[in-house]
Image: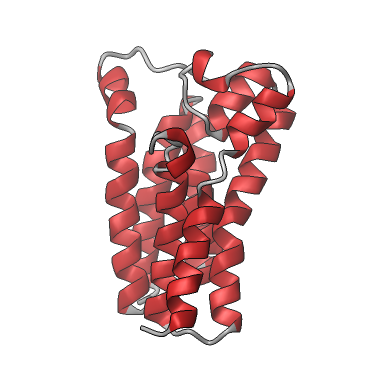
Length: 193
């Protein structure tokens, strides 16, 4: 692994670890960790502070994933390094060093990563998310089904092995990060949007 690759991976983690939702909410005088679900992601920001701010957080969090992946592509660092850079950005969002490794669930940042690595499967995942949320009015259902749709589309489109491995790892991470949501879904207590 080259010095450029290591630098890109470290930079992707640091970029991913910027707590967008926390910063946007703080600018409004709110600690987003103390309201709603307590999560720093776009969904909790939208529920607690309004959809416009939720969309803003979603876009910035997605850019945290897209930007380093596109930089790695521009530098011709190869599929394996691009996948590692994408994973680092997502891990940074989920486990930010600045917040004692307690971050978001990684969905928006993963969207940005896969928009750069696998645009058509990413679009399929977004479509599944939107349909699921329209039908159920539950964001976590959309996230879980969207991640599953993304992975299925990646297999169907025969993505390169490093990208496919990343897709499987991110699917598992999103599933794990939604454990509490899954428990609430099983009890029929999950909050609707």
